[in-house]
Amino acid sequence: MIWIFLFIVAASILALIGYESYALANAYPGDTISEYFWYVSGKYPILPFFLGLIIGILAGHFFWQRAL
Image 1: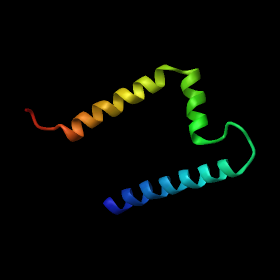
Image 2: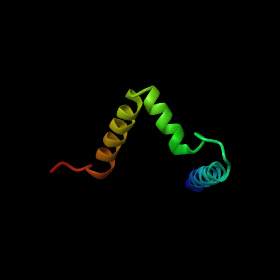
Image 3: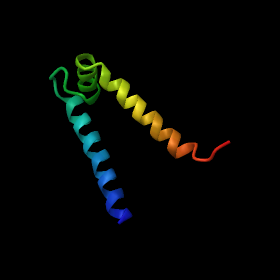
């Protein structure tokens, strides 16, 4: 079961790397992954806040599990 999850994660990462390589190689403006996120965060500024909040909460749960 864990191998299926790892395969999906690895395939997703390779697909993103492939798309970013293609986007950097062509001449169209605004098609890289970072430019897309800049556009979305400019249009909906609350999304980066909530994404950072969710990542922060998950990091707290994963890395600081035990009470001091």
